Image 1 (tube, rainbow, N blue to C red):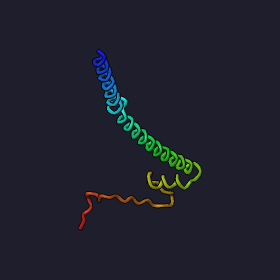
Image 2 (image 1 turned 30 degrees about the vertical axis):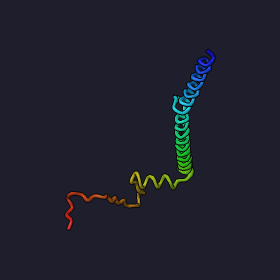
Image 3 (image 1 turned 180 degrees about the vertical axis):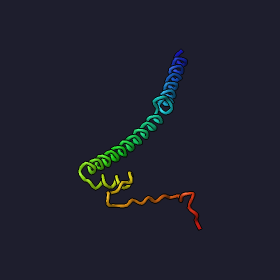
Image 4 (image 1 turned 135 degrees about the vertical axis):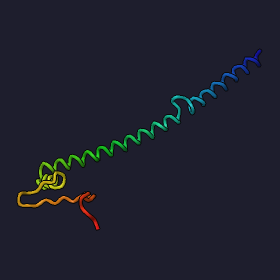
Length: 103
């Protein structure tokens, strides 16, 4: 009786250890999952740092637009193709028009 009770307790003890180790390494909240979540968190921190850096650059650009007339004039000339009344505007395109004969 004593031998079977002892072997029965050993069996459940070993089973408990095996289940604990299995869940620790392979369960829903295992070390593999924790490692993956840590990597995901690190990637998110890197993305946040990039967005903050871009935001600071845009804020600096807005500040330059608000304080300096040079940037507004540069934008008007390059993007809106505007010129002063005493200047002539030349537009250079990448593709030639169809009605021009090339030699």
